[in-house]
Image 1 (tube, rainbow, N blue to C red):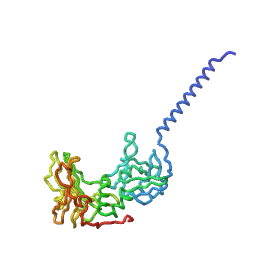
Image 2: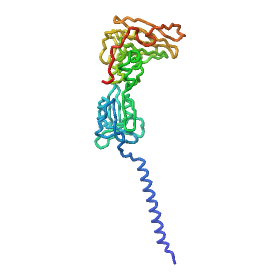
Image 3: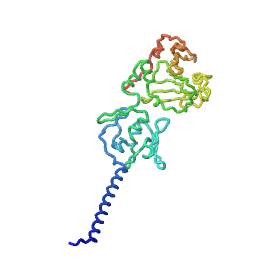
Image 4: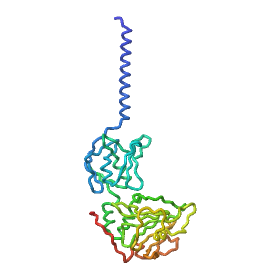
Length: 334
C-alpha cells in the first residue's frame, strides 16, 4: 500500500500541536494556581474569648493565607480600640495606645507588615498578629482561643489581692512594652545604668519611674500597665552626661516640661528603690520621700567593690516598710 505522505504529515503536525496546546494549558493552570489567593475557609474555632468575654461571632473567623482572621469591628470593640479606614491609602489605622497600628493590603515585598483582607462587605484582621502588637497574650485549645491582657490568672490575683511585697513584685514583672509611652525619651551617652520605682505608701497598683529624662506615672488600667502621666524632668541629654538636676524635685515642684496627662497630686509619701551602676557593679538605694519632700535614705545594698555595707533592713529585702500595710486591694472578679 502506498503511503500518502501529505496526509500523514498533516495528521502528525495536528497531533504535535494538540500536545503542545495541552502542555501549555496545564502549565498555565499550574502557574495560576500558584499565584491565586486561597479561598477563605471557615474554621473549626467556635469560641474566641477576649479578656474573659466571648467575641461577637455573628461573622465567623476565616483562615486566609494560613492566618486566622477575625472581623475588624467586633474585634476593635472587644479590645477597646478605635479604627479608621483610609480608602485612598487602602489602609486601616487601629488606635488603642499612643502609637497606632497600621494595617495594609498584602504586598509581596513586605511579608512582615500587618495586613487586612476584605471578604465581601466585611474587613478581616489577623487575630494573632494584631493582638500581640497590642500587648495581649494568646492561649489556644482545641476549640477556643483566649486573648488575655498581660495581667491575668495567678499574676492578676497576685497583683490585685496579694500583699504589698507580692503585688509590687508582680507589677514590676509585667512586660514593659505594654506601658506605651507618649513622650520621646532622650538617653545619656554613657554606660551608666539606672532604674527607679517609687510607689505611694501602701499602694501597689501605680508607681513613678524615671527613664532617661522623662518621669512617668504607670498605673494598672484594664489589666495593663499604662502610662497616665509624663513630663521632662531635665534638659535633654547630649554627648556629655550630667546629673546636675534632681528629676524628682522637678516633678514634686510641678516644674516638669511638656507634661502629658493630668499631674498627679500626692497625699502620701513615696517608697523608692533606686539602682545605679555599671553592669554587675551596682548599688541599690531604698528610702522614702516624705510629704514635705525630704529624702529619707533607709538603706543601701551594693557590689562589694563599691565599699558600701548592706543594711539588714526589711525594706531592702522586701521593698516594703516595716510598718507599711496595703490600702489598694482589688477583687479579681471585677
